[in-house]
Length: 351
Ligand SMILES: NC(=O)C1=CN([C@@H]2O[C@H](COP(=O)(O)OP(=O)(O)OC[C@H]3O[C@@H](n4cnc5c(N)ncnc54)[C@H](OP(=O)(O)O)[C@@H]3O)[C@@H](O)[C@H]2O)C=CC1
Ligand SMILES: CC(C)CCC[C@@H](C)[C@H]1CC[C@H]2C3=C(CC[C@]12C)[C@@]1(C)CCC(=O)C[C@@H]1CC3
Image (cartoon, protein in one colour):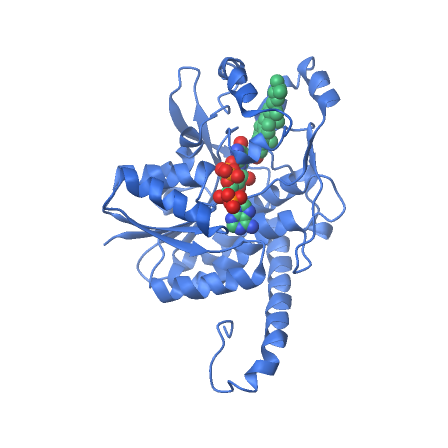
């Protein structure tokens, strides 16, 4: 039977490269669903995939992970379209208003931390977050919470007796414990919402394994390395695309010192693709699976233990469940006046 695979943020970068790789491996064997916020960009991605794989099954779904209503609506639509979901790639992500600290970068160049700086971006990047119309921090809502709600809504088609399903998070080497605070999970106070959201996804993946493995649902985390995509181009907005291209020889040279410079979306998608081929029961819930590219341009996937613990992951999970209840309550409140007219119809969010 065809595997049903849903990818969020599938219209560009690493998400799109993953779709291309999945179809190249087995065009007829997968039913792809590209979940994107912008349908024009989604259409363009679908056309590109069909151009190289004309017989492939590629469906589109509108979903903005930063919007609670959009996530609930998309989840309803998914449950109508599919009665099983084998792989859910939680890949959509943003790093808004990045600020690149040039002084810290030059200091880093002459310090012992130079390799870590290039591999993780640690110490040289901050961001200014925004508030969504739902009143949540945008980075938290987009990268983490929208995905959490989606998983919770899709539980009936992800958890099936006698078979397994996989959740696969695109995390980052930029995920740091120091950027995350259990008392401020949305990162309202700090200047590293991106790092915080990615560390939270590492923790959440562990908690999801704790709560769902017995129902056949497994969660894993990957790091794509440093990849040239829309997200990274925006880090230096005054830097035109051709200058990035001119820097490529330097980046290839850096690969000699860190294999995290995967650079292309194809290479960055290596671990996402590798996990597709693994038995989920054999995976380590404490490991982050890294896409790596050697100096000779060979791609491979390597697990690395994450700096996470069960207690913090459970505490985060509890807080997310609380936020989820709040959101469900708000949605029910909004639905109340119309219930008067549709009293016998179960609403899409009645679960
Ligand atoms: N590039 C890198 O070096 C690294 C990237 N990552 C992670 O990889 C993932 C993919 O990013 P990458 O391919 O690099 O960058 P891209 O910007 O190319 O891809 C991000 C994707 O997420 C989508 N997206 C953003 N916000 C939303 C939203 N609110 N709702 C739905 N979709 C949304 C984007 O859609 P749209 O086109 O409409 O903006 C786009 O399709 C992200 O999670 C990122 O954090 C992790 C480590 C390193
Ligand atoms: C010569 C200079 C202009 C080179 C500047 C390089 C930096 C902009 C990059 C070096 C390491 C990169 C990196 C990221 C962003 C860009 C760098 C800081 C990420 C933080 C992007 C998002 C991630 O999730 C992890 C990346 C780690 C490495």
